[in-house]
Length: 90
Image (spheres, rainbow, N blue to C red):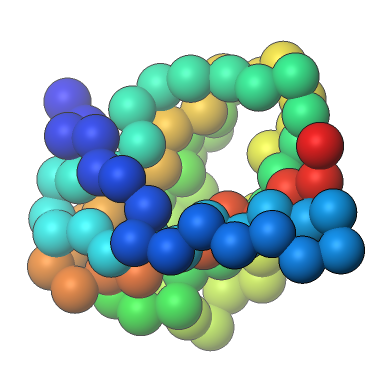
């Protein structure tokens, strides 16, 4: 079970929202969905993205992952000190 964490920074610029999360192992964003798509990137540590029967582990060296609108997903930190960023436009 993923323990919910709030963003440390939430910034809007030019209609784009950027939410930065600092998470410990087991923390992140529990299963949910949106009416909009967004990108997720890991900037430090490791995290796993679970969506529609897939599980994708990412690090700072991974390409951003696109999460499509209306698709359930969750993001979980796999180690302490993980930093991940969600970017979206409403």
